[in-house]
Image (cartoon, rainbow, N blue to C red):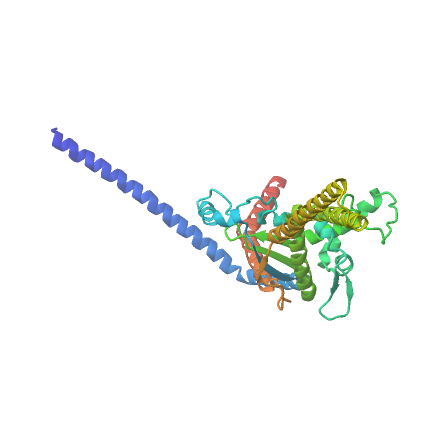
Length: 387
C-alpha cells in the first residue's frame, strides 16, 4: 500500500467521523424541536386551565391595583450658581466625568457642594423642621400640619394591617408602659420619640433629592397622596434648602459684618467723644495764646482727627463686609417650579394587571409541565411501595 492509498483511507475516515458528528447534532436538534413541540402541545391541551389561571390573576391584579392608594409626585429642578473655581474648572470637570475620572462637580472652597444636597434634605434636622408646615388638601376640607397629615391621614393597602398585626401584638406584649409625651413639647432632634422617628422615616422616603453630576441641576421630588400637599411641600423644601445653603455660605461673612459693625460703633463713639472734648476745650479757652494752651489744643485736635480717620476706616470695612455677604449669597435659577400634579404617578394599574396575568401564566405553565408530573410520579412511587 503506497502513501496515496493511505491518504485516501485517512480522508474517508475523517469524512465518516464528520458525518457521524453532524448526524448526532442533527438528532439533538430534532429531539430539542420535538421536546419544545411536546411542551407546547401540553400547554395547548391545557389552554382552558391556563386561561382560568390568567383570569384569576387579572382579578387579583385589579384588586391589588385599586387597593394601593394614589400617590402624586411633584418635581422641582434648580440650577445653583457655581463659584469661581467651579466655573473655571467646569469644562475640565465635565470631560473628567465623561471618562470616569470625576463626578463633574467641583467642590471649590465650598464644603456643601451640590452633591451633598440630598444628604441635607434627608437629614433629621431638616425633616423635623418640616413638621409644623401647614398643609391643606385639594378639596379644602382639612387644614393640618405636615406631621399630623403623615400620622393620621396617610393611607396604606389593606394587607399592610394584616402583615403588621403580628408585629403589633409582639410589641404590645414586650413593650413596657411608655410615659405620656407632652404634645406641646418641642421636638428634640438629638433624641426623637417613637412617633417622631416614624414620621421622619416616612418623610425620608417621600422627600428625595438628586443631583446631575454633569450639569449640577438639583431635582427635588415629593410624593404625597394629595396633589396640593405634594406641591406645597415641594415648594417649601426648595425654599428651606435655599435658606440652609445661604445661611451656611454667608455665615462667615455675616460674622465678619457683625464684628465690623461693632468696631465701627466703638470708633464712632470715640470720635464723637474726642470731637466733643476738643470743642469744649475751645469754648473754655477761646482767645488764649499761651503755649501750653496751644499745645493742648493741637493734641485734642490730633486726637479728634485720628478718631475720625479710624471711624472712616471702620465705616469702609462695614461696607466691604456688606458687599462680601451679598457676594457669598447664592442665586438659584428655578428650571422647573413646583406645580400641582394632575395625574397620579402610582399605582400603575395597567402594569400591575399585566404583571399578575404574566405571573399566573408562568405559574400555571410550571404546574402543568413540571409540578403536576412530579406530584403524579410521587403518588405512583408511594402506591408501588404500598403494594
